Length: 177
Length: 397
Image (cartoon, rainbow over all chains, first blue to last red; front, side, top):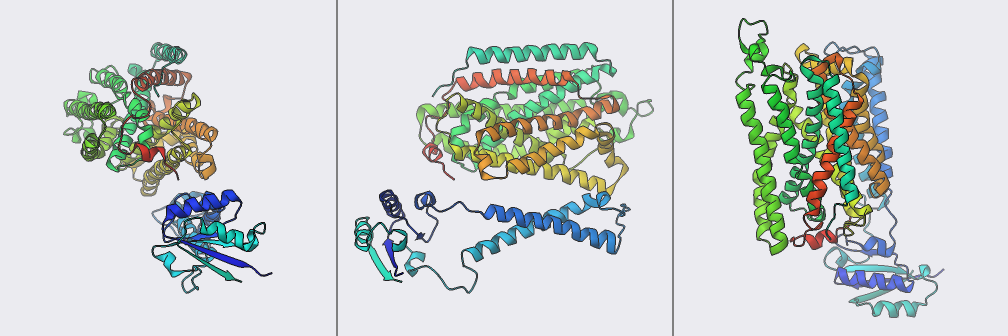
């Protein structure tokens, strides 16, 4: 199906925010907004879903915790029992206090790296990946709003264009895809 | 909006105070320990717990001036009201110290002059070596300086805060900002040394360099949690409509983060001493684990595990019911922590948590409500003028 994408360019984040709330009130679905900095309060307006990064962090953290304990049990107790400072070394339970600092560090390490990597992969911004922003000016002093025609089937292309033109933009780019 | 201390709440707090006085009296007359030590230890740890709430609130208020935090503007009056409990709690603390100075109790073993005299049967070489620091005159000088400095700063901040309501402008704010740096330096030293003097010296032979921070983290957390409870109460009565979910979430974050700070310091102190296993260092934990095993680990569990599991998610930090329950849990946990700071060092294997401790707690809660709510009623709940007031009203995260 032929689709059409609109990129409306604004030169002020407040104008974009007002335009977005107006368009959403009229029933338009905004696909995305590109901005050089985070625009405070834009997420609920354009309906960005709440991040699930916290869940990922928890899973990675729990993995780190378990890996560290299992690993240290193997290294320090099973494979090559070590006696440090006269501490008993027969069971994990008797030694677990000494392992807590490393377990903690490893939990943090895995949670932090896992979160960063998930974030980069999910946003397709790993180093070397092609840029996805439509206009280099959105990394400087312009703000762009992306609207897909296929997401707004109740409106015709001209209607969307008219509404965008009335929203205080500085430039409108359209593309058939 | 002005807060009115309803007569219902007032009589409720007076009933609690009566319960507290009756419990203390029963405790005194049924206490057969040496020198009524159990009674005095009960009074000491309860007053110290509420003193730490007031001082923690003072610290947090000054910290938000120093960092020019905007979101705390709306909750500033609650902090100021909690700080008013500084004076009543320190008066009760000083009564305990005064009784110790005159030998009415033996909580502070080093207050007995015999331990410093060579050749006397009570002579204790380890304590005698600490005489330059641990002696009664210097102890009193220090205690009066701590409380005096805290009290003067609290008074001046409160006075300027009320003046700012009338005048507005930024002059007072800049003055607050500048003074906060001085206070924080003094507080950094005093919060450590006061916990050595008042709490650590109970276990006179024992010392821990981490102790001051450990007690301080508990102070800070108890103060934040109390602030949360009072705000939730006020909001349930329809006051403070300006305080939105973002403010609550930020306070909830503090509860969560400071629970971790406290657990971190608790564990650091415990693990280092456990690992080194040096006889003069382990005494503190041997006493607590052998005689108070359940309480000791239970306190750590409820102060670490429950906040971690329950306050981790964003939704629970925005849910008033969760926050209220967690505030009670954390405050109770830190009250138990205060119990364990004081009582094992005084009573060893004779101590146990009894209902008189809970009765005394209720009495202190009553006095706290009475003092704090009266202070709340004296000024508008939300500052009339503050340079960051608008920003705080629009606080959103």
